[in-house]
Image (cartoon, rainbow, N blue to C red; front, top):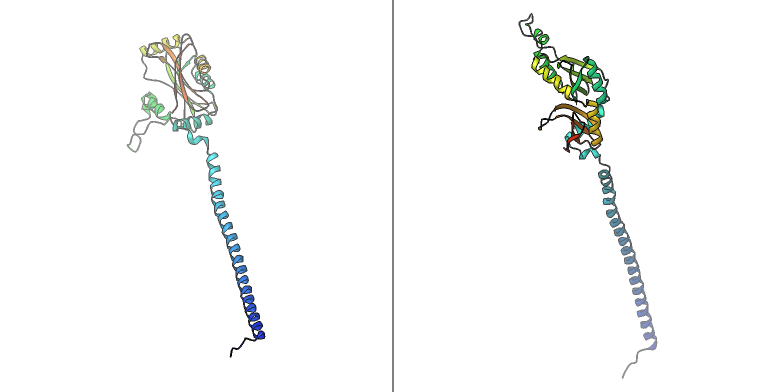
Length: 274
C-alpha cells in the first residue's frame, strides 16, 4: 500500500524552506552591504593618502626652487671682480680730485703715476722709501736699552687711498698718499735716491707729455666706459711715451687703455675679465 504525502505537510516544508532562504538572503545582503561600506571607506582613505603624498614633495620643493631664483648675482663674480667692486664701493674721491690734491701737495708738480689701493696696500712701499731717507736712518739709532729702534712707520690707512707719484719741474720725484674717502693728504715724501741724471730724465719725460693725466683719462673713458682706477706715464714696447689708464666697467672687468702722451690717440686696449 502506497502512502501519499499530505498536502499540508508539503506546504509547511516549502514555507520553511522559503523562510530559510529569505533569512539567508537577508544575511548575505547585510554582509555585502557591510563589505561595500568597508571597501568604499578604504578606497577613500587610500585616495586621500595618495593625494597627500603627492602634495608633500610639491610643498617641500617650492622653497628651494624659489631660493635658486633669488640667488645673489655676486656668486658669479671672480675674486678680482669682487675686490674691484668692494674697493670702488668704499671710494669717495674720484681720480681727478686725487690728481689735483696730489699735485697741490708739491708746488709746481705733475702726476706721473696714480693708483687706487685698498687699506694697507701701500704701507710696505712707503716704509721702504722712508727707510732709505736720512730722517729714517736717524731714527734707527740705538735705544737706551741697547736695542736698535725700528724706523718710524708710515701713517696707516684705515680705508682706500690714492697713491701718487708726482714730479716737480726739476725732475724731483715725490710720493703722495691721498685718503680716498676724505680727500686729505695722508703723507708726502721726497724720493731721496735720485741723482741728477735721473731727475733730468724725469723732467724731460714730463715735458714730452703734451696730454695731461686728466686728458688721458678722458680719452680712455671715451673709448671704454667706466671708472678710472690707475694712471701711469711711461714708454711702451715701441718706445712711444704713453699713458696707461685702467678703467673698471659696470661688470667689474678692468680694461687697460694706452693713450699716446703726445697726440691723445688710443694706442692699445686690453680687457681683464678675471
